[in-house]
Image (tube, rainbow, N blue to C red):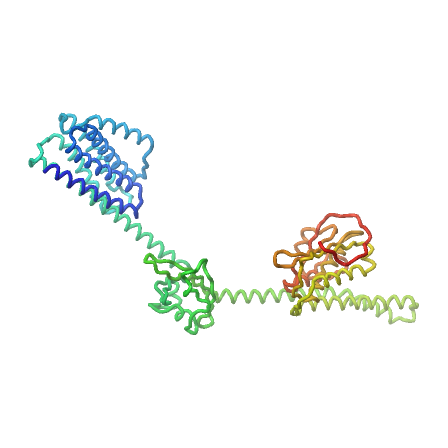
Length: 550
């Protein structure tokens, strides 16, 4: 009968250990890990006790039984310390536990030992269990979980049983033997139930705290959030959505959000299964409101994939953006008007002065009159150039792209530079066009204007003799044009303001050439001017084709 009770105890302890292992898979706490190990060693000790019944001549079984049970009680103590003060088993504790296990193994079979040996072993293991129970008793200021006091009492009672039982050594199959064994199982079951209650209550409390945190976080976003299932039904919505749209209930998302009650254009719900990164769409709501939706797919625990949508009301932001754009446009117009007025004032003043002189024609010689008329014509042409550049800057026309060869444009710009005697004598022109560059669609007039403005800027930046380079090549699938010169370079302040209208470092310059090049459509200006700062000696321009293959 004693063997049957021992076998039943082994099965019970093993099943309880498996239950602990299952619970631990979802509640990985250090104190619970130590308890899991302790209950496993207790199951091992009961199994050794059963094996010793059938193999009494194997003394090693008794030694292993004593050692495993002592280590199990030490793990119970370590678990209580871990719960109370976040204790972690150290190497020193492992060495002490190993020495204690060796001492316990030396006691051998305690059933045949003296009362002193049995009481000593019972006092040690019982005292450790009582001390472990005290660690589980809740302290002031610590979280109180149901089951901690229950576990503390069960361990203390178990410890008392370990201390008292060695003084009784009833024979197997007697009522006293059954009573002692039943008391052990009772204490063991009490401790097991207390641990399960404590762990589940702790997990429930942490889950509730996490749920409250998530709800506060979701409700405090400052924008909308909801979950939409495959039928467009709203399964959850935060407080912001209820505040904006009232009771949402089980309505469809587009019925709540859109002005016409139709599905949102570009809605990714039907392809949520293959969605990667979040997708953003814009939706027009009632009363002209605008909403920005950031949509992401979410897999629920049951395998269903829903759509998580962050909803932001961008109506006021777009209105503010429009007002800011309008204010910037008006400021730019005012700045341009001031710049134009400043640039026009000088030619007009020169023309007024010249006409005043011409009014006194009888006092002027023929040469003086010719010189004055030349000045009027020069300032008139300058005034016309300023107004022409301003009109191009203010109202650039739409590009008319035709399939052409960029070599024709480069040839024309190079010819303009070479045909100017003042430039040709002091600037060597080096044009390089890669043979792989194919014809492509572009606006020839705008491209010519861009290249001419940048090239002319480079020529005028060269003091004395120098070199200007125009290189055309492929950069992936695009055509890139680089213009270089050997001028002295620009200061950092001038580099930052290079594309500002009416900013120029040249005497008499309008500052609109590079600004116009920058404002033309990006397809007509692949690369802006580059500014190498190395000077070189000048060689006379060599005759030959206007460009060469690189």
